[in-house]
Image 1 (cartoon, rainbow, N blue to C red):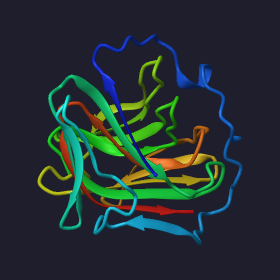
Image 2 (cartoon, rainbow, N blue to C red; image 1 turned 90 degrees about the horizontal axis):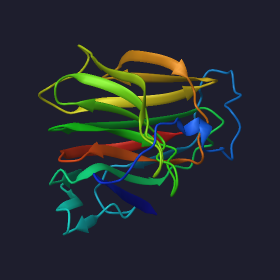
Image 3 (cartoon, rainbow, N blue to C red; image 1 turned 135 degrees about the horizontal axis):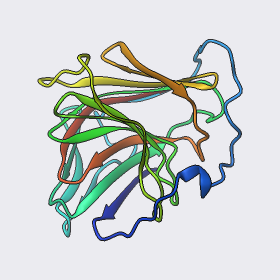
Amino acid sequence: MMKFIQHMALTVLAAATLSSCTKSDYPNPQSTTVAAYTNELRDDFNADTHNWSYTNSLTSSSIFLNNGMLYFTAHPHTATINYATIVGGFKPAANFMVESSLSSDNQMGILIGNSDTVNGYSFKIDDKGNYAVYNEGTQHYPTMPIIDWQFSNALSKTSNNVLRLEQIGTSWHGSINGTEVFVINAHPLVNNHTGFVMAGGTNGQADYLDIKW
């Protein structure tokens, strides 16, 4: 089942971190072994198997599949953040990997661990060659940067970029087009949903979503 959530610009947000307001149902990651995956969920967007398609005429936002690509539109700017996710299959306290190839005209990235009440964590890029890692907050608390926006030569401005977020032991490893750009402490997740996040006013596309655990 696919989830699509929009947050409007008039939403009032209080300054606090997600960890201070939400208790995860899962423990902190415990595995210390090198990742070895035996399960895979891959969507190449050749058919709408996971029910990504979505249209909201009030905000002119939509998600649709065409020729093996997943397309996102999110205009006008009244919708500040858009999330679209599916149930990922992995165990949040064990090793897992999420990868996608994507591009946009603004800000777009991969998202893990969101639910009806919390927005999870994102690894996202923009059209200027920057990347960031964010705690996406909740309906009542704001997004908070874990790694604030910074430039990377690994990013392409003219083609799709392959983003990979991998949990190995108690660390998150992030790479862009095969180049590792960060290693940070893993954060507890409330569930195993994964998918995409976009800033308002963004047109974006992805040509696959691959999840291993």
